[in-house]
Image (cartoon, rainbow, N blue to C red; front, side, top):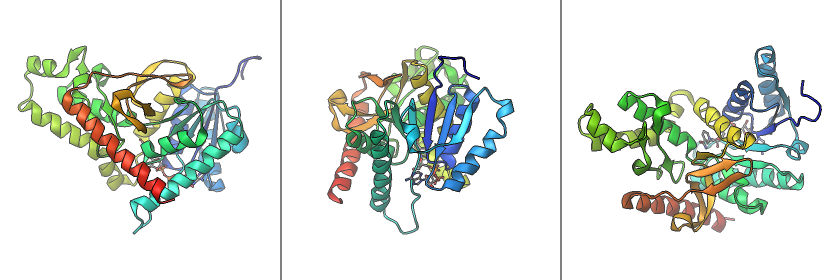
Length: 321
Ligand SMILES: NC(=O)c1ccc[n+]([C@@H]2O[C@H](COP(=O)([O-])OP(=O)(O)OC[C@H]3O[C@@H](n4cnc5c(N)ncnc54)[C@H](O)[C@@H]3O)[C@@H](O)[C@H]2O)c1
């Protein structure tokens, strides 16, 4: 029970599939929100995804989990969009993009129509293109519409480095930038273990042969993670669910955390007319500040190449409409 005058922190999750429902479950257990509303085009699915975790409420921090509707956008602190269509056999990448773009636009129109003052977090893939579209469609100020970007990829990168170096993952600081996808960039120049630049750490540790090759292998493994998991079990949901708790928690608690969320660039890194994952300060206002890291020449070129791929996708979508 909330004390009088205490405002419940409210999160609306649009899309109650594998990602939306796992995020809602993880968020409920985190104690970061008092109200969690799930919406889905499939009403029965939404109800099932609410009732199942709700029956565990005696064992959670106090939280209300319910099926929501559009009116819930109005006073939501954060709206997380995981709604999307799955690729049908024979469907082109562009056709799927068009379908998901239409879904995102419809949801954003509803959020704007409700006069929401919350923050939108887009998760649906291709997340960078759809974040860009959602931001443009909303006409909201930059920073209030963000994408989950490469926060998940950065977690995968940290995990693999911690395994390779046999160090607690919490002492590994590492970031993946750019597209959440094949052109993403592992920013080795920003990678530290216990405060030491990773190359220095490796030299002093002396624990592995052929460090440059190991680095390329780790980068490749981060990129391929989602493909493998989807082959094995049909979807990725747990790590992305926790990633979303991290992003949403930073917003709800005004943490000013450095996270590589996807955000529209306006000249940072020499880029504009594109949204992609860059280290950003995330607070109650969404993205409060974009950090311009001093990348190596190779990393900067790779980031520009990643942005070009995303810009082509945005333009292809615009041309097709
Ligand atoms: N950005 C990331 O890091 C990341 C990671 C994993 C998955 N994803 C993406 O998240 C999305 C969801 O994945 P999933 O595995 O949960 O898929 P899913 O098919 O299990 O769930 C999607 C849900 O969206 C619902 N939906 C469709 N149109 C809707 C609408 N207009 N309004 C409300 N609900 C609607 C569907 O009924 C379905 O329940 C996919 O696009 C996936 O690629 C992103």
